Image (cartoon, rainbow, N blue to C red; front, top):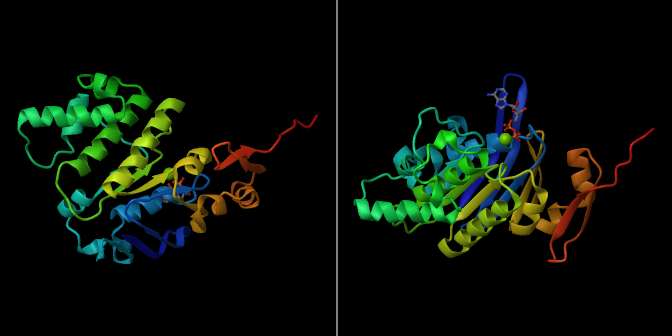
Length: 262
Ligand code: ADP
Ligand code: MG
């Protein structure tokens, strides 16, 4: 399990995280939602171990982050940041290879790369220059890279995947394919998945729990129906929002009717 207690972070006068706490269980998908600037990416950085002053307040599998070495942490948690910038003209295959921590026999490596890319409908991109891909194609390759990082070692203890707006450039079909892969992976491999999202309806359909943030604070943390409450969302997003029931049984979030004032 991942536990984070009372995370507080300020930079200069600005409070970026204000007493945020959460737990993340193996096998579950937690969606982190909230307006721009709410502190979502900063929270993900903290949970990833990238903010040293918060590493004593976060534990992974019972051990505080400050006691993990970078090499062992990399076996247990993989991170896809909001912005991934590559300046070298790596091929897609080489991008996936960066996630391999140990040399693999070439036949095994070939199959592994193929499998990782095929999870996200990207096997046909294997020999392309990464920099020549569309934004959505690059996101699918990055997803394959982070899953690959967790796949390459036989680990008994729970592993964690942190994804920051990982479907923001994807079309509707690929968004749902990605979430189905992530959801199945969480259940079958008992991995914990934390996703930062702007699409409230993807969260409604796939998340097990939701953390709703605003101005550095955790406004609500709980089940999908509890957190996706119309009044609460309207307050947090400062925009009129309705919630109705999707035919599938989960909440369907819709912006309330907007009429132009003459
Ligand atoms: P979100 O991902 O929810 O959009 P972020 O976590 O990226 O928000 O940022 C939260 C707030 O903290 C934003 O207002 C952002 O401008 C500010 N912030 C983040 N990093 C820094 C920094 N290094 N220096 C100053 N302000 C920062
Ligand atoms: Mg962000």
